View: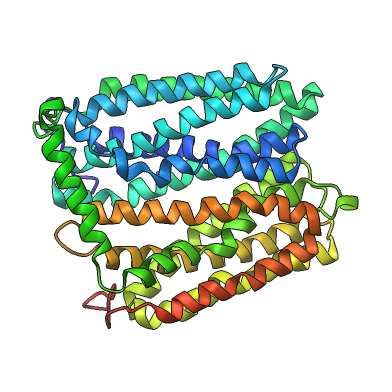
Length: 431
């Protein structure tokens, strides 16, 4: 891979693939995770912050509906550059809203715009990646793009949360601290946009779309793709699995950070924002990444069918860790970090089964479009349960809530029992 040569006059893939996928990961982790910690630090109830931030999944739910725009207008390179500048401006916009009286309303509006830009950037960046590299190079760099996307998640959920906590302690104000964090993010993203505007290659295949004249024909083709997806055999079971496999996790993830931050007299662990950045954002996400790697290796050795139930159990059983933490309230950051690492490692293992099943569902002549539809249902399965999770926890407390999360694994087990997976699907020939 280190000997991959760039086209004469163009940049090496190493100059832009790591930064492009780091840039893809940052706005997602900001919208999905940093917003939760921000609103918790600003004093929002779990009911409100879970409801508001769950709505931010919507752009990823409906992303397949506007993905043809990237084909109709402009080039993928142009889309990437423009959207990155827009995300940088949106991050600065959040920084401006935080000190205001109507911070929740204004910042949510900006987060919405950022979420749509981020979902659109995902479409453009992935399309550009396939155009800018020959197929053999795409396979060689797939691990690189995944690694830097994960590093963006760890840097955001771990490093930036820690930084916000450190600045809060130094300035005595969560408002000032988070405003500075978002100004820093805005500057970083504008820098990434300038870098990519300069360094991204201009592949010959990345041509301008035909514009509005082709919209009618594309719309017909688009509807045909959707219709073919919903005609798949066993579509009801497929949709049930996509929506319910992460049903317990969708609720747990929204309350994980609030639980760690809430004081002990409210049932939480009373950690500082810095400690959450270490325990959940760094140790936990590192374990999640390792779990994903191990899960992928297991499937490659034995196939998805044989690995399915061990991975399903690995995903859901470790949720007991949160119940144990809520019952015992340990004060040791090492103990808390270890419990979170076990839960996140299991989540990483189980999530690989979900991703592989989506690949199986998408198999066929329209697999790219069908996979995008699967990801929309995946996001919907996270959005809806997350919306009520804060309200439920506020009404019953953390211990009963974590008991409910364990009960909520039942629909996931039922759907896992109903799906059909071909023998040896996902298994390497030489495994």
